[in-house]
Image (cartoon, rainbow, N blue to C red; front, side, top):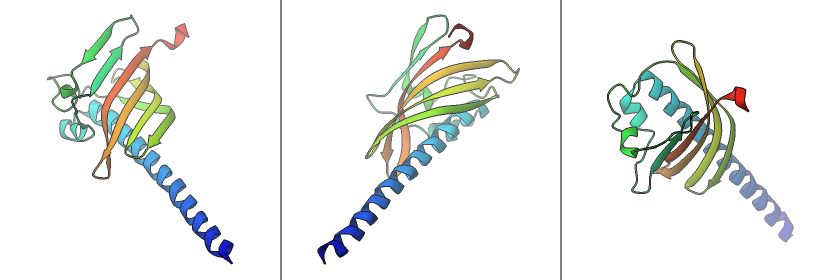
Length: 150
């Protein structure tokens, strides 16, 4: 008799747990796609809404020629003039996620196409936190690479 009660409860819990992870993963992907698109379109307000700058936020970028930039996180919500809105598009692939409660880290590949058709490629690590039920970026590490040298 106990199993008749316990088993359905376990199944409900399992379904809820799996469904929540799928919902979080979908919400995170949607946020990352929005962040990429708004950077290219120049929509400062929508781009800033993707971010939650914290004292521990950090943005690191390494380029194909070996340079590294430590970008002030505040530039994600108050970008320098002419730093975004240059058009083009991007495609994120190969998502890998670790979601634990209100924290997540995500790695993915990005293929960016500039307005002139020139492509660039990067491996990206994104750090996110959920605040008031919404996922926000708090940090990222972007590593540009030349696929011909792989």
